[in-house]
Length: 112
Length: 115
Image 1 (cartoon, rainbow over the protein chains, first blue to last red):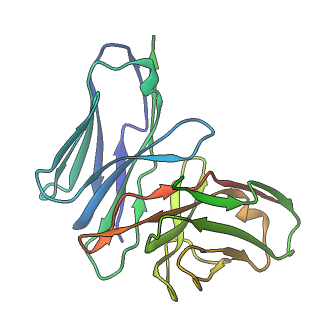
Image 2 (image 1 turned 45 degrees about the vertical axis):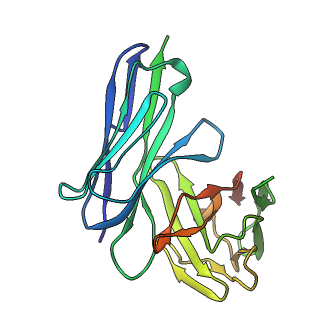
Image 3 (image 1 turned 180 degrees about the vertical axis):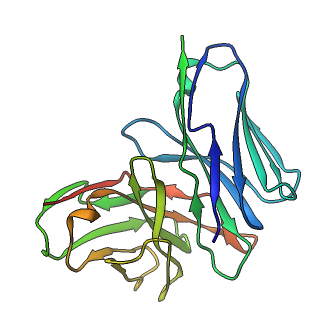
């Protein structure tokens, strides 16, 4: 059974600091997704990573994928309050179906 | 405007009373999916569909039904709702890219309470 684990689940950090959210998964994967959810809102796509070594960046967020380690990271550079949200990774496992498994999410609170 | 719509947005019902939550997308996406979101559990996939007349179970399909008669619509049916189906439900759609679902576009959510 595929498991997707995010660390940490809660993170409180100061503006201007850097931090990384980790997403480990237990089986091979065709693709990995990162989403953001603001309180009381729906989910918004951030990145889709398709291959080993893939790196994507948007503003202060950068995501990378290491398929050999079954690990993706979401790095936040010089955090600002607007990045406060819950971040989810999700995995499409490498099998014949296209089920998608989400991690439990990382609630990020950035203090001004 | 490209979007995924869900109706109703809020619903309070009683145990055993059949209900349907509609989901529609206007982006001609092949892949559609239903999730439920519960505190501490993240999102769990209920059912998904890779195309018209093709549906498959996600991780938590028990107590739910779906159909995909048209590409744009993917209704979620609860034949006999129970209190443990009280949750926040999201519909999502995505195109198929490189042989799999690409980024998903989520609807606004339906908050369901079953008394």
